[in-house]
Image 1 (cartoon, rainbow, N blue to C red):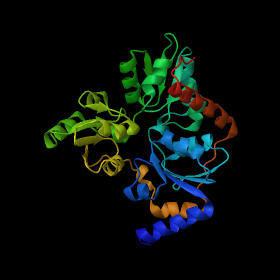
Image 2: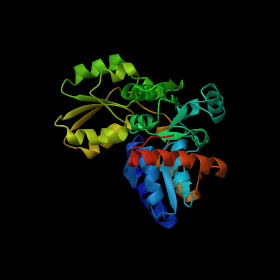
Image 3: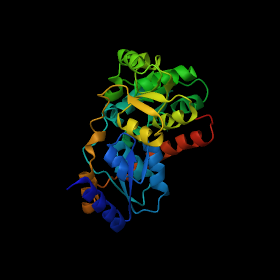
Image 4: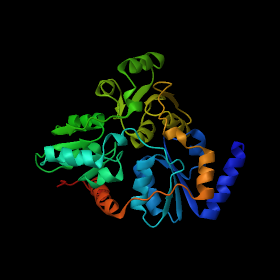
Length: 310
């Protein structure tokens, strides 16, 4: 089936199912094009919670669909590709976190949203790449922070807040693949460009860029800059999104290989099948869901009105 026929069938199935399609910024261009909303994982989960749609097709990875399901328990959340996981999220399990908490009983556990619902349920508060600094800064007193699972984002938050942060040994294979040599090569190729990098990149890379930001920050940055060219040091799907948002500017991937394999698993055909067959429904056990939702809500409280987290 060609792309136009697929799009038409998807549109018809959406109407029949009273569905909405949400796509992460890292998805394939054609998937982004059929989405009703684009964004980062938390933005999309908030949209899922607000929509009147009965069915939410989440074009992303497992932990993102779990978050949407927890914030929208009355809706049916579908993940088109059951196997679409996140290597970073898989680097921390609930059992591992319970053992680590025994080592650091005084620590406040900050869980990056790139974690399973089960890990969130064992944590004290969540964060995103956009608000990690604010969340760590909100921790009361001088209690240490156990940051799970991305060591690079945790290191960045520690630098910005001057807090004691215990780093979990986890990383995003895609972002960690970027080296300082790649940044210097981009400087030579695009001497007029500003370099934006995701805080999941290594500290050595972050020292060499003009702007450190999550995907939502990257979307805002060019709009407030007189610079006309940008190097984008995050997953390649972001370049497509940025170019559509700012057609008068130019965006370049930091490397040709900046691709997350699991993000690219979702295709138009998989979306069509998900809507047609109502698969795969994402469910989070109630006992985990309640605890994890409180952890997410604690983060949202800090984001809405900074406070001292307990």
